[in-house]
Image 1: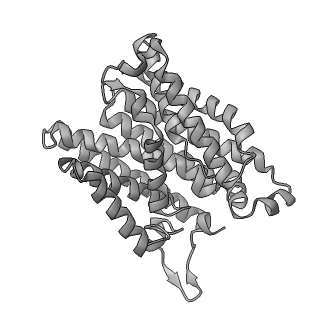
Image 2: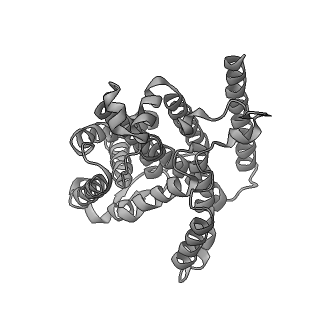
Image 3: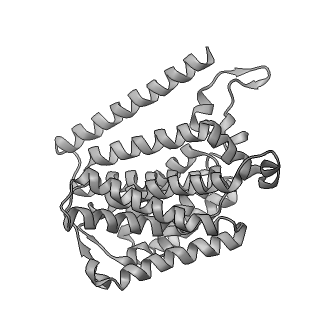
Length: 322
């Protein structure tokens, strides 16, 4: 019965997702949403993909990585080169962007994931800056001037990539491999003593997260007509990190909600360019003062819709409390 309920819940979520897709598509096709609002929805989708991909690395596996903008940049430039210079299809360009980011993630992850805590954060921050400087000095992709890219990203493409990202990471987290990653997060020494290959699972989570960050990079590159190394600096990595921390470490739905809220706040504050960052920072400080565990803590949004029993929440969310 429990499996049947999970299957029903899964297909209900898919059905609701397609209803949301159709509603937004009708609003766009009918001209009810202008270019600004359409672009805002696309940006929210890209940011959700970035937040969910980093959630797997930090929230599930407990690896404090702050170089996610590096994978975003690799995916953006790789997909742009594929579509603009080699003239491959948009889907192939997106996949190549994701694969390129995943390969680099594996090369970087194997040596750097032996580090822990602050040392890993510094190593990943350095990686992100190295990637930015490499593209800054590559004349073949425009260097500091940036690279012109044809606009191909649309709402259906963003929705499809977002849906695949959430399904893959959700299923990975709920699988045996995901449980192993959670055990690494909770106590790496204990997990190692129980025979879990901690290095393997840390690298696996890092590679999967990098792949989807690369996909987000491809969508980003083909949405803004031009990509420039300055947009992939360490501040971009901190933006993605804030999505995960504010949403609640270990909560995928929290990362999604935080990505939506902060993208909307950042967009609406764009009219106040002089005080935008001050207001943005005040909102973050106040939120963390009154909700230090994040918006969702360690719970998923589905926890609020489950029937309570005398012993507590029935079918409690094992993903984040294991």
